Image (tube, rainbow, N blue to C red; front, side):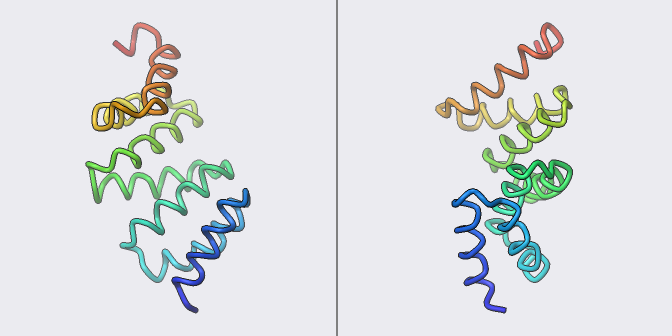
Length: 123
């Protein structure tokens, strides 16, 4: 298997709106290259987009553990936890992402949405 070719195919699947197809292509690649952050991030995004939130969380936690300064991984992990109705857990990661990259409107919007959801407890 040519891993680069499969990764490119998976990217095309993902970009064309088929995250499940992308995930199927990415799973063997991550088995072959478990330390590849780009593959793991795309796989996590594919899981997120296809509502396989437990799987997305697993890969995003791995990304955050390996690179705590990855603001995007924190953001998507926060969004995943938000979709799982784990707002208190989501808040931490959304705050980290927004603090690291405060110019991003998506980050701020997600953070405000969860803070509003939690009300006074978020302060």
